[in-house]
Each structure stands twice: as structure tokens, then as C-alpha cells.
Image 1 (cartoon, rainbow, N blue to C red):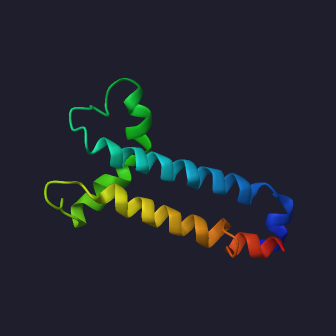
Image 2 (image 1 turned 180 degrees about the horizontal axis):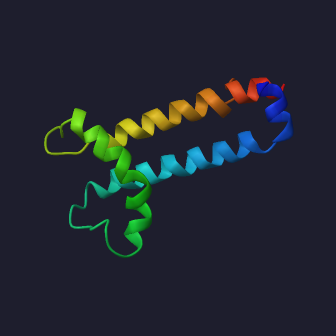
Amino acid sequence: MVTTLLASFPLLPLLLGVVLAAWTLLFLFRIVLTWYPQVDLRRGGWRLLGIPTEPFLAVTRRWVAPIGGVDVTPVIWVGLVSLLRELLVGQQGLLTMALR
């Protein structure tokens, strides 16, 4: 079933890999922006960074408190998205292996 689905959409793993990589970059930018608390992610071009990441960070902040006044939730999401990307489309990922 999965193999026939992947055969009909050969670019699916590539597209998923690009989307997950872009999402990782967004969270990495959020990590850098924790050093600049004066940046308002609700204004201007910063919204492109805040809109796709804030819903996930808000949920995670309920469980993980800031450590030393620093929001560590973007670091958690970089790890989770990187792990998901590796499990799905990495060299030994599920989708990669299903295509072989």
C-alpha cells in the first residue's frame, strides 16, 4: 500500500524533506531571535517566521518552562523536526527504504 502510494508520487519524499528542512530553519531562526527580545514577531516580515512556528512553541511552553529566563522550546522543536526528517526521508528513513 505505502509502496504503491510512493510509486504514484515519486517526489513526495523530496518534497517532505524540503518542507521539514525549511521548518527546521524557521525554528533555528527562532533560536537566534531569543537573543533579541525587542523583535516583535507579529509585525512586518517577522510574521513569516512567527506564524508557522508559534502554535507549536506555545503548546510546548505549557510543559517546558524557560531555563534561566531563556525559552528553550525552539531547541526542542529543532530536535524533534530533525529526528522526524531523518526517520522519514534520511538515508535509512522509512520513505527512502520503501522506494528501494
